[in-house]
Amino acid sequence: MTEPLLLLAADEPVDPVAPGWQLVLAALLGIAVIVLLITLLKVHPFLGLVLGSATVGLVAGLAPLDALGFFTDEFGGTAAGVGILVALGAIFARLLADSGGADQVVDTLVGRASPRALPWVMAGVGALIGLPMFFEIGLVLLMPVIYLVARRANVSIIGVGIPTLAGLSAMHGFVPPHPGPVAAIDYLGADLGLTLGLGLLVSIPVIIVAGPIFGVIAGRWVHVEAPARVGAAASGGAGGAGSGSETGEPGDPDERSGLPDDGEERAATTRRPSFVITLATVLLPVILMLAKAIADITLDDPEHGVQQTLDVVGEPVVALLIGVLVAMFTLGLGSGMNRQGLSDTVGASLGPIAGIFLIVAAGGGFKGVLVNTGVGTLLADWASDADVPVTVLAWTLAVLIRLATGSATVATITASSLMIDLVAGMPAAEVSLVVLAVGAGSVFFSHVNDAGFWLVKEYFGLTVGQTIRTWSLMETVLSVTGLVVVLLIGLVV
Image (cartoon, rainbow, N blue to C red):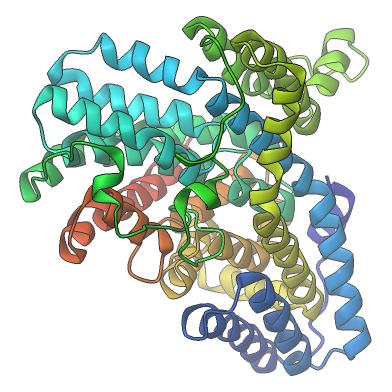
């Protein structure tokens, strides 16, 4: 992780390099360049962030070589801190999918549920599958289950689909190792274990409100029968990332998710891992990271042997690495994969995340330029004078950028960059809540500039209006509920 750099940024705010109006203009123009390039000119967000960084440096009056140095330094630091987590998360998700472990979890939970309990169970399935998986991978993986459950229960696909999407989206917005939360934690110097714990705590009421509760309402507004097969509703070629769209560009969902399509041979498996083994494997890295956070709080003794051990195994990279290694045995070899099949599965998981990796790293570069103009210090002073809660400001910034770009990751990166100096000196719990506020804002009202909007529309067989009344409003309910829960938790921590 790039904690030393982040701590330096948090403890030693950068003095503004130009008058306030010039720095604000630089930040606004930089964001505007990113928005216009992504939304109007369809430029890849990686290039948009590079050119937006150049705009900020130029307008703020930084020397070109200095701006380039700030960008490249933070690009490298972010790549080192976030890239490993993203790669390990992708490997873990692919193993879960290819081994049949995800199918086993779904079949076990759904098969035992009554029709009345199905929306609640599907919300739990979405959250559980979404814990290690990117949104689009989880959606592609769960669509056959959503169709099957809707047909068996003779209910609208919306009634079971919306709760599932709420579980997936909440995990993507609030919980590491998803790219947005990991990037925000990295930028703001938050404690990952504490943020993970609070993120899971926030996700429970958020998923309940935006999932089963709103799903009942959305199901009354829009009634759509499940198609007979998975590809029927998506025959138009839906694509792109989900609520955390990484590129903002549509594409083939199977290709973008890293999952094999019908014409691609999966790694050979002869049996599914059991539900208990799969669940334990999925939760292992989460338990290790939470154990580290609990030990740091309760023991508070760096010399204590238990805390020293948990500090190592609970370090995010180590915890995820342990999870991947265990999954290679329990999910990979345990499902009958041979060594070559296991190697193919791991290799196939890495290609699709190249774009995500570059976007997040370029976002770190953008942050580096912003921080070193001193605009964060300026905003911190203004926020202090205006007495605006930092969490509300963080959520608002993320919402505005999300609405403009359609990308949750770009919204998270940009909003977090602007909040770095505002969290200086804040207690660890409050910094974690700021991260979660940014995550909540980053999923606000997915609409036509978000590729995830079209992915959901096509897979669910909806019109644009129906998609807005269901998916878009669900994302808005999830976002607003997330902010409310964060503010409530802030009253007691």
